[in-house]
Picture (tube, rainbow over the protein chains, first blue to last red):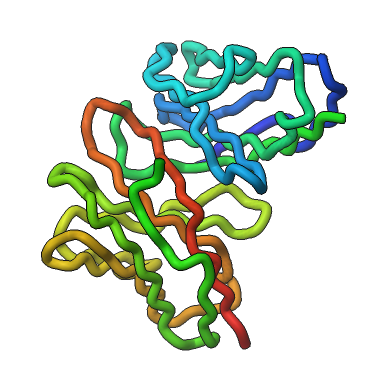
Length: 113
Length: 112
């Protein structure tokens, strides 16, 4: 069974631009979560989706948004990029709305210049 | 804020057991202890979880103290590939969802 896939793997954007990152969960998994990882703040939770509904949201500004499609694939969008948005963005999928295990993808490395 | 305290770094000799401690003195009765690890440049990987009994799987063993205020992850025969940051996380298994709150973790260095 294929793992969690994230595209693109690497991305360079300029301040003020917007970006969309994509995540395809493991087949059959219906829950998708997003995390941001930076050297200064570590791994921080962004948001979680189940059955196209946002269930939880972390403490991030409104520039960060996401959605989940009917096939469980998810996208996150960051508008008006800032230098501090440079980070590794990780997606994790779980089988159900409440699961013991989460499976992480390899991440998308975003660099904002 | 993370509810766990872990040493920032540890060393272990290859082939020896690696014992990674975690303090979670404010754990609630419905909260489980989870361990994940992150190998450099990869996404975190689930290792094991437990509520109050000791648990073992093909990757590791989890020992939880009787008062549940601390736990130890044991890698019985550490290899160089076990070099990673290990995260201890506590969270309830309920309708609140799957959100994980990561702390700083322990950077384990396995040395030849």
